[in-house]
Image (tube, rainbow, N blue to C red):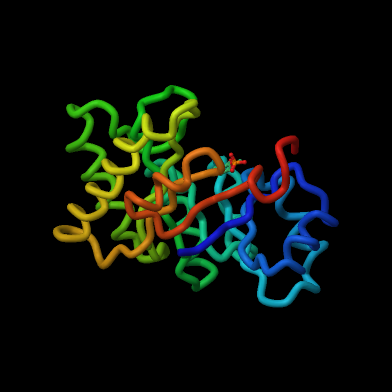
Length: 207
Ligand SMILES: *Cc1c(COP(=O)(O)O)cnc(C)c1O
């Protein structure tokens, strides 16, 4: 189980305190905010940065290098752009494919909400996983915000099922499921999360 401390909106001092307390994995969801922080905190040994938010295709090149893992590869166009730049840099970019399990329009990712969309989504996920410049390690999702975390259990379960199904067939060995945030991480872990992304429970309510 990997705990990613989500540092969006948090100060460098707050991040340093979390580091002192033992945190080594930090997640940011905007490139413009992440890059200066990565730069300013280079003195912290052993830190791994995670990109967990939407990446615009025209900024794809900028995620190659600073990040240990991209959680938010959310569409084929981005996957192919990243593949292109990773190949040019002669690296394999450690990635997760983001899925929209709940169907909320505000969420990014491959649409798994409508059963009729599954065949195409599966095809594209397999295609993305096959790109030589990407080392796809598994899937990521964001559950809807709800009062009762039990309500989102089916979202996590569906993602775990899909990962298992694709691992068994068309893609390499997937080991990672990035799911669960402050309000729902217990349920996500019960459903098989290997990475949780936690902001408020670590840094406090207001960012
Ligand atoms: C902000 C954010 C989180 C953390 O949310 P909390 O509810 O503060 O734990 C996790 N994942 C993503 C993609 C985020 O943007």
